[in-house]
Each structure stands twice: as C-alpha cells, then as structure tokens.
Image (tube, rainbow, N blue to C red; front, side, top):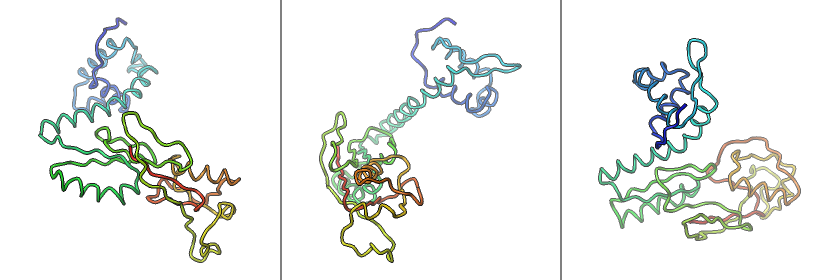
Length: 250
C-alpha cells in the first residue's frame, strides 16, 4: 500500500475507534450519523496516511487487523489531549481565559481546596478553578495543573515533577480505626505488630501512594495485612500511628 507522508487526522483516528467499537462500518456510520461511504473513505485515507493495512476481507464483510486495533488503542491518549485542547480553544474564544488548575488527592479536595478557591476568587473574581483527582489513579483534567498536591512517604524520596517547584505542606501521622468495643481501642499508641492478626479493611485496590505506605510499613513490621474487605478508595485512609505520610505541593 502506497504510504502518504501526511499528518494524522484526529477525526479519522476517532472514526477508526468508532468502527472497532461498533463492529462494522455500517453500524459505525449509523452511530456517527455518517454514510457508510464516508466512513469507508476516511478509513481508506487513514490507511494511506499510515501505510498500514487496517481491514481485511472476511466473508462478505471486513475484519480489523491487529495493526488497526493497536493504532486505535494508542490513539486514545492523543484524542483525550486533543479534546482538552479543543475545550481550551473554546474557552479562549468565549473570553474565559482566567483559570487555575489544581490536581490533588480526595481528602485534600475535601479539606483544603474549598478555602483555596474562596481565597483566590476574592482576589480574582473572574477566575475559574478546575480541580481533578490524581489519586488513587492519576486523573487528568482539562489542562495541565498549576498546582499538583500529592501524598508521599515521610521517610522516602520527595515527589519531583518536571517544571514544578516542590513545597512540603505537612507531615501527619496515620492512625488505626478500630471498633469502639475492640480491646485495643482505648490505647493511646499502637505498634503495627499489635494489628498483625486483626482483619483489615483495604481502602486502596489501585496501588496508590497511601496504599504503598501502608504495605511498606506492614512489611517492615514483618507481616502482610489480612484483608476482610477491599474497596476502591476512601476519602481519609488510615493505618497505625507508627507510619507517617506527608503532602507536598508542586
């Protein structure tokens, strides 16, 4: 297939993903309100631009190749970024160009960010603050954050992000949360080994920094916690007071 040296068109990549998701060109055409001929033309052009065989005949229809599936998978982050860029252009065109983008973990968004927003908007009433969560998974907002607040181990290396200056905000102890009737509930201080045989509730199934802190602290104490329940995320995760974490802003 002749290869055309041209910049890839994001619209054609989006159409490729639509065809793969729908399972056929005809169904993708109905979903996108295009004609099947238009979809086929876009796919033929994309094949020429990439020099790849994207579809092969199979019976009376066509089947996507492994190259098509891999291209569609790799195109998703690009399409997400392009979508954010389009929204930025729309904002600029509408005259809404004053933004403060903040990325943070859930408990910071709950405890700190409301006051941050109130304070900055007192000084800049037309400012739009955009907040995205970076833990337990690294969620991405409409634009690159101006302020990125993350959790890191108190005894580990600090988080350093390219293009940011790092400021340590606070160091806090993590505490054990126990039933009121538990024999250890009245203790002023525990060591992790006190909790070795207790059933744990795992707040983190995504291997976030807080989950890593807990796992590392338990490992240093010579055991792995036995979980009675696991759930995706908790706004204020806790463990024993012998492990600490710190929040740093970049």
